Image (cartoon, helix red, strand yellow):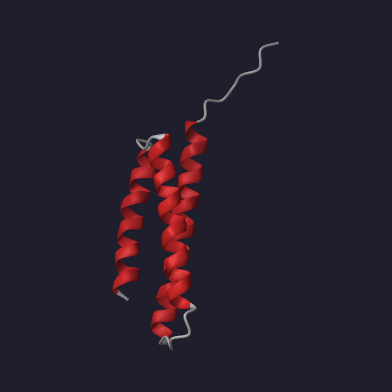
Length: 89
């Protein structure tokens, strides 16, 4: 439970960072790696064979959704940063 709560908090902070548009390409790469690492760890913990209470299962699914939303936010921020080309005729 502590892991998921901490992960949700960090994701919230990272999402604010990505929305502000101040993250560099290198920082975005670090965030993508963080999302992948934490998602893998969450998957390992949740599928380890230990009995999880329904509340914890719900929390794990919610945390996966948070990771997915962070990645989506990062992708949207990257699209905003790409300058649009104009067609000259």
